[in-house]
Image 1 (tube, rainbow, N blue to C red):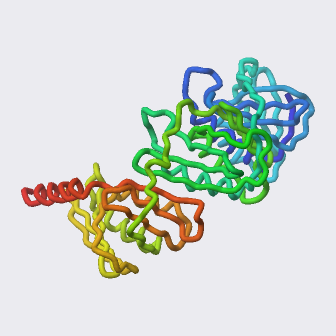
Image 2: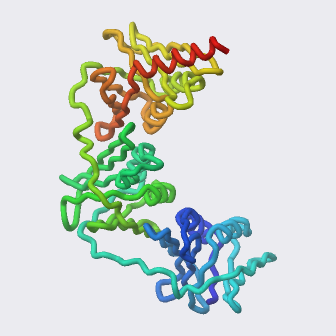
Length: 384
């Protein structure tokens, strides 16, 4: 193989591919590796973790075709450090990748590409297009609610639900829930489909999406394909039936509170500094156009803060895990967020004031448990 590729194009491609490849782990020899291929389709870089794959096409001059595998992280790091706007030359010589530009030269050990896995491509049942900006905003609005681990594997991904010319994304870890919906004017193929997309794939998608141009999505019963710009992602869906989240979202709310998102988040963060490491609980008391924030932690201290806001209902006391509350508020971009409360022990719904098509749900902590944590902390502090 002998190719010449502009450094800036190569840097973008290696970053996208290595983000997926270098997080792979396992005994297979291509784990953490990157495939470079020069052939009839041009110059392509590819990576896989066996659950998903990414392919990036780059502009380049091909003097001799070929395929080779290099370590993804090493290759990414060296390409980033090469001079900008330079031409990077690759030449395979005696099992080494000879890489040079201007006064820089590398010789990397390569591996045979013969055993590189070919992805089993299924015929799409449904396809549609959206803007990259909208699709990225949907992913960013939901991925924070994914669990890091869960015995219910289906929860380890964002659930895509296509119906009535709309795409709905949902993510939940049982404590937090995020949902966002966007119109899809034209759908080719089946009009109603659903599947759950693994966390790593949606995070890498979100990271590499731009703010301009379309993204084309194809769905099968077990796979998703996303094409945009010069990038293609393909991944297998998670097995299992996704839970019925509609059943846990309250439909009626006697209490509705408009929050200045940034001010409320800042007050919550202050309270979060002195919270128990296990429960991270803070207690909020709404009354007389204000909200009081209380927290306490053994060997740290306690906090009491107050924030003025528009509230005229009966006194309402509710407790949250501070970290979950901060993540939920942080997932919105609006200056104001509406808090919908049914009871102090029921799931609380956060809604955008400007976008009816998105919501977040957060389970409160039982007040008895939050108070017990505070009492235990105060008692332990007294003993000390």
